[in-house]
Image (cartoon, rainbow over the protein chains, first blue to last red):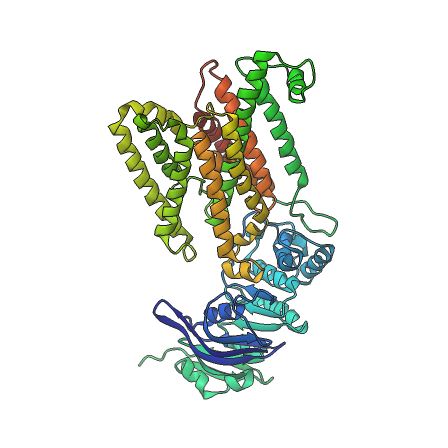
Length: 252
Length: 342
């Protein structure tokens, strides 16, 4: 369980996050949604422990800031593509904390090979990461997170810039992590997809938490519409799944 | 392009054969360098002399080998390794393939320090030239750090302040030279780089600093891979990226300042060697860094051999050789690479 209490982050003279109080459940998928600039990415960095903050974020009772004993995987929205690194080396980086940087144990090798197969990257393990397409790169990132065997994975917009087919492929790969008991926190633009995969949704706006709870509760809450300035419609499919669609501006 | 695979079907991080080959290369280039010159020495006799066996070189040849050629080859190797490694490290830290060891003002600072030593003829500071240029280089880089202020937030601000500090130091240097026109020639020849001053004293003190710096850099070389990722990824994989950057830049600056103060400004090594090695090892971090150090050492020993022998008995500035040979060679490699990738 990750407990966030009175979290505040100021950068310069701007409040990026204000008075955040949420609980993130162990082994569940929590999704942060909200418009651009709502502070979602900064929140992820704070959960990682690399971003200074005031207030308190505890993971299993221990403050997270600069706590290097935790094993947290981070999947950025815009990864830096390393030069001259093969896909298998890139995924192997996920083992760095266990094996030491640049070393690879036998266990790690077979694990990396397994995960490459699992994520459909085994055929291209000798290619350079710089040669991968957007979807393949995203899978490589997830593969690296998988071999890291983290307790928590943070994903920043894991499906942005992917076509629908690849979005589903990546989200299914993330679900693999959940099956292994990993706590997942991701940001996502697409609330429909968020509702489909995440158990919990946190709606953020201008650095504050507007509303949070189970996906079902959040999706059907009237406050959701106000968070998006009433520019969305929520429909329910026959299967019971909600679909959130943006409203077209009506011109008079 | 594809890399090789090992038994689990993964591509290995390190091809030890390349590193071993660069060791062998350095050894042979070293032997060449101490054998050839205006007076050629017999290889077998060199070995006998070095191992103190009988039947070695005669008195004069012995002096030539032990007091001139050997320290000079060693200094060239040290300086080459220092410049090539620092270049690769700066390129990684600043995520800029054109970053070179002189970028943060080290070259201009050392130039200013050397000019002060040369122009202050009255006080006879010429023997202190290496110390002056070392201090100049370190002070210039420290000033760049100080001015940029937020190195962590924006690596480019450090590069920019390095350029500003460099320009300022160069302006002061030019002013000093104009005031003391008799010093133009020695300053100019120092700027072009020279290993003629090599003696055991210089080899000893420069080897201490350079080896300390290189040891630090090779130790963190595997973690330097992490600097090719975003800071959050590096952090999640167990690296403190800011701390690593500071360690790497300090060690690379120590190596550069020592190299510059021992041998003047030898250009091109810090950019060409990392790029050449990258063509083979694919990257300059991790175990590629050791290969770069070895190839850099070989490159400069070979360049110095050219400087001594091409116009023998006259001697060319080594900086001229590194640029004259290095630039076209580099262009050929670039062109070949482009043709392969097309």
